[in-house]
Image (cartoon, rainbow, N blue to C red; front, side, top):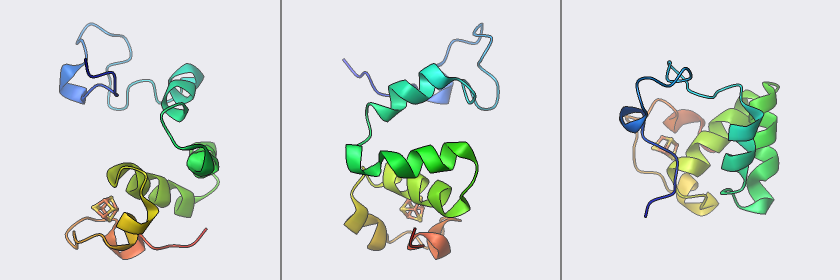
Length: 91
Ligand code: SF4
């Protein structure tokens, strides 16, 4: 059984939080998500969620995209991705 985050299309339409970014402000949702993130990378996500670091937000998105494998972010081969020029930003 897949227990990862729900794809937006799989969320129930009747959910009061099924808007553009469901549960975006939910601390419970962030705690749940944080539990799936490697410990050494959690501070990046905390900084991104705090809204104080665009670099952290980009890094977090890229880490998530690449399965939390930092070296894979650096080797990304998707130049069409809008984050591509920013993916190696050092924190
Ligand atoms: S730049 Fe690469 S690693 Fe970052 S989100 Fe885009 S595809 Fe994923």
